[in-house]
Length: 261
Image (cartoon, one colour):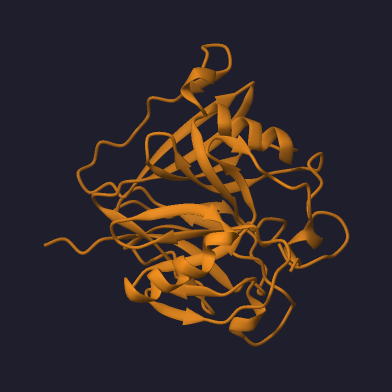
């Protein structure tokens, strides 16, 4: 999703509490991989008749990081998940860090992004800790990321402490689309959750809360920007979330295998 063009695609150019879980509201598939080297647990979730896919990281086998400039290859079996992360500012042929929405850190290396007014939160992660929080704390966590060989990028904060904190811009809450978010669950697990059908952004946020999300960060979407893929284990084939990828994607959230001793 690029910076502000007409309709929803333009938005990329911008630069649940368990008490809510009831049998007729929420259904979880029982198809969870039991492979020893599983990096990602895949679940199909239904909330109010709306289907979602939940891609939950196995912290014993994998960790959260990021890539920029060149998208990782699907044949890289160490990568369990690859999806667009921060906003991209302009449709440029050449890569510039300043075309990524907000300053960011990859494996301890700081990169200067552009000042993106849409950003209200960030995701921080290293090989043992991850958190999603509001922008007011971003500077201190950028410093932690550089010291701890961690990763951080900025985006729109949509859920905090189980509450909808979306400010209503740049995407209208009533806008229908397929949405995706980086989530920390009430039980402390990390997952990327994506709707399988179009729904309003406000309904997407409400569904995340019902499914047990404590904190969530929007991930860049829109045709071409929503391209991504995942695999459950190093031996699994990559499964595409969307087939078409714009050549202007600039950065990606990754779940990657830890080095095993």
